[in-house]
Length: 283
Ligand code: GUN
Image 1 (cartoon, rainbow, N blue to C red):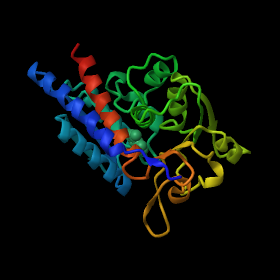
Image 2 (cartoon, rainbow, N blue to C red):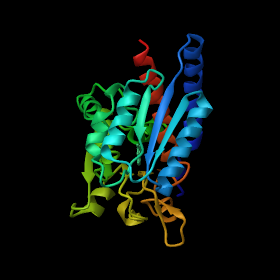
Image 3 (cartoon, protein in one colour):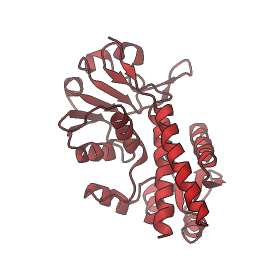
Image 4 (spheres, protein in one colour):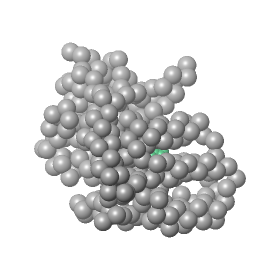
C-alpha cells in the first residue's frame, strides 16, 4: 500500500483564496488589514519563514510591516516596539518570529502583545480561551493540521490520536484541538518510556519533535494517518521531517511530506487569524 499524500499547498491555496475575497470585501468598506512581523537576529530558517509569511500577506492583500532587528536588540527595545504596534491602528496582527535571542525573555515578549492582535495565538489569554473551548484565534500549526485532516475527509471523532512533542507552539495546542474534535488524545515526549508502542496504537499520529526521521515504520499502525510537523536538515543538508517518509508511506493510509504539507497550512491559518483580528478590531 502506498499512502495518499495530503497536499497542504493546494488546500492552503483554497483557504487563501477565500481570505483574499474577505480582505477585498473589507477594503470595499474602507477597512485595511495589516500584519507586523518582527524578526530578531539572523537565523536563516526564521528568515525563510518570515519571507514566506510576507509573500502570503501580499498574495491576499494584507499589508505586512517587517521589523528586522539585530541580535543585540534589548528586551526593553523589543517591548517598546510591541507597545508602539499595539497602539498602531494600521497593525491588526503582531507576530514575533521565534526563537528570539536568549537574553530576551520570550514569555515576557509574548505577554506584551495585545491579545486581540496575537496572530500566532501564543498569548496566555488566547491559550486559556482555547483551553476552555472558546478560542478567539486558533494556534496556526495545530489548526492547519486539523483543516488538512477535515478537508481530506479523515474522521477525528472517537479516533486514537497520538501527538509526539509537547511544545507550546505545536504539541500542547494540537492535543487540545484534537480533543475539541472528540478524539482520544495521548501526548508523547522525550521522557515517554514506551513511545513506539503508544505511536503504534494511533489512528492519527502527529509528529512535532524536530528529530530527523524519528518515526519509522515500526511506530506506525498499518492504515494510520501520519502528519509530519518536524523540519530538520539531514547530514546532506536536505530537509527531512520527523517521519521517515519513504518507508512509512508504504504502510500509512495518508501522510504529509516535509515540504508542501503542514507548513503552507500553518501560514494560511496565520492569515486567517490576521483577518479575524482585523474583523474584531473593526467591529
Ligand atoms: N517559530 C516556529 N514556528 C513559529 C510560529 O508558528 N510562529 C512564530 N512566531 N515563530 C515560530
